[in-house]
Figure 1: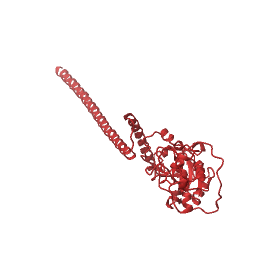
Figure 2: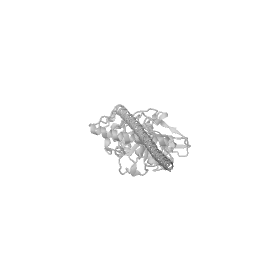
Figure 3: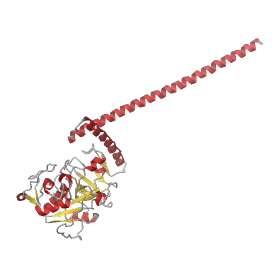
Figure 4: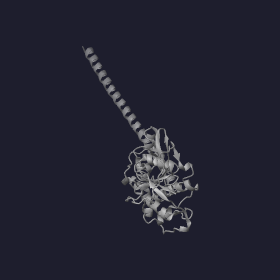
Length: 364
């Protein structure tokens, strides 16, 4: 009887020991799992910190290169910190957009331009095309043969009718560059001579415009029709308002007339570009222009109403790439913007960005 009780006690004791051992084994396993999770979290945080630091270093390097390339100097350290933060936001925007382009969801690429330290609103505030009533008198209107076949593609810059890319700087004088562009083209087509004309002449002397405060291309063409315009080497560009120094004895070019394109009609614009020459056009320079780098700028966010037009440029040709029609447009933001100073804008997309809304061409 005592042996039976002893055996029962022994078994119960062994069971308790086994139970305790199992309990400690489970705890041990849980502790190991917990420690493994902690180690993985630490590793994740460590890698995240490395990536974040690497990203910050990359942004800093980009920032240093950006400032050096474009000669950026800020008035205070606080201002520079602000601009760097904006620059970083624009870098993320560039990366996000270019990923879409690489996946086939966009037809153009973005890059770090001289405007990469500006907010969207600051960039738009730079546009200075005057919002004013158009003059009622457009001068004499010349008729053109609209029965001629037009080529599938045209590029006046390859025919010698377009001067080098210029840079308006911090002056809101896009209207003057747009106007001189169509005059330079008209003069070349008539005489075979390409003369770079003076935008500063228009900025300083056209009283119907507001110099660096904005202007209107038709007013500039009216001025040249009446007075003529000096060459750029005789009246260099200063990117600021100065006293008029026009000398009638040094006029380089005069125009006989100018004519407008039928508002909103891209077919009419195409015909004039093909058969007559480079056309001065007003556009809605949307947010995407700020960081545009290459490709066909297909931008349904911009508008085509007359009220939305805020930038003057020059249509020098057109073409088609991978089935996508585009305009070849000369800008005045220097060669370090876009395609060496040019932008390809969508063509036959419901007058996108208003490229045919308010266009005019000079006649030499």
